[in-house]
Amino acid sequence: MFTGIITGLGHIVDVQALGAQASHGKRLVIETPAGYLEDTLLGDSIALNGACMTVAALDPGARRFSVDISAESLDKTAGLAEPGAINLEKALRAHDRLGGHLVSGHVDGIGRVVSFEPVGESWELRIVAPPELARFLAYKGSITVNGVSLTVNRIADLQDGCEFSINLIPHTLRNTTLGSLKLDARVNLEIDLIARYVERMLGGSLPRH
Image 1 (spheres, rainbow, N blue to C red):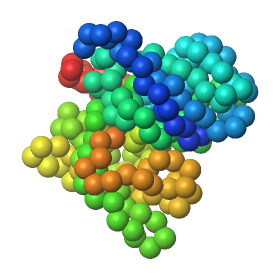
Image 2: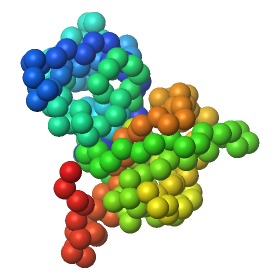
Image 3: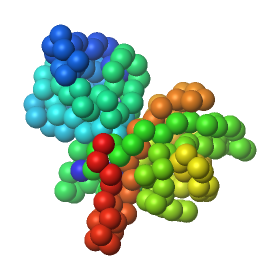
């Protein structure tokens, strides 16, 4: 379980194939900030751009850890198949503050950036979500974008999806990778956990991929 509050900026420095077939996944080697891995153990969960992964190898001295990611997970996420900057969050501990909202670390869909413009001292980020996620998005509700807990400010249903708007303050731009997003960039989306359970209790369910 996570909160959507990023605890460090990492960098995928190496991507190694786990086999020669398309059905094989990859091993990612991630470099972290100094001291980030001091309380990390093998088998711990760390979210990479919002996707929960298990620490498979650890080298705190080199500030690096590795995870194995399946081909299925690579197909259902964005930003994890090649070297580059990523958002990191360690799993929530029982005594931690819940600064964002409850996040499972399971990506529900891929969104696309359609606008990223300055508004005053902040920036407005507009993303189009897949149509199957539209019913889970609500004004002033929570959404996770590349692992970051954010508040929906505006919603517009479209023929091919749902466009939602979020406001990014300077702190978020400085301390996450969201500040470097470009037009048409693909981002990982996770719907609000409560909305997921409400949908299930009402008799619906997310479509199978």
